[in-house]
Length: 373
Image (tube, rainbow, N blue to C red):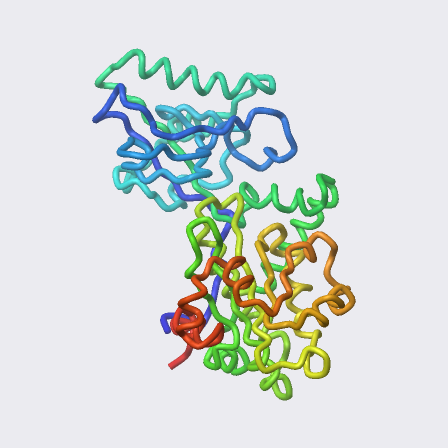
């Protein structure tokens, strides 16, 4: 294992990239832009007035330059088109465009690139588009269109604020308190010590793991083998389970195609566990108490399987600690077909493996790299 410390997979610091039209002055960018100049509270942490909403299929300038969904336009030909000044110096940031490596801006260039637009709401996005059209129309080989963008992680405020706002039904003060509490939790939680004996036992036992065999339009899954967890509960802290859960959640959310809407599913495998007598709900309570306030709006589905129809009918009592919105995302079933439908798995393959537990053992990811030798 390369390191005994697990850091969060997202920080507030962006990466930089540029789109140059030098080789194709009249070419199309190949991206659909989002107008972020509507004066909504969801825009308040976004540094610019336009971001990439979708990439057009085919060979395009955007694709050739490595542009991704949610990349935010902050400057055109060195002139800033920002909502607020940058929090970091360019020299502190990773450069994703090869041509940017080793380039140092003088003070005047930094000031120009960090320029903030002061137009009225609704006038900044058109100004950005007009600037692009103006340069392309000039078709000056000595001054080709160059668009500078910033890329933020899935949990940076730029991308996460919308989730926290949605989790608090648009109430800005409540959402702000929630995100501040999350940032304090994050500061106190990371890095996670991977050498912890309890955490290593959970990882080695594969009691919590990652399964990523979903269809393209469905997210990956955090798998929890509840029977294995309960074998450890006598001499292991539930906090170790939560840490394992956090690690795999962080790994999977970082792979989201759209960092504004990262999603993961959860599968609680109850094979060999009697939900009426041997099921310990306290572990789920611990996981939920961490997940709900720190990863809002990231749960796609929580599937609990196998659970009889009789017990499933009383699940609202069993899971009374879960809020109503999250309960709607729970799937409690004894149907393998339903499990596969919700998680995007091929039922025939699951059956060929011998069941869910065996299928997961075949397809689990990332866990080995976290285990100490």
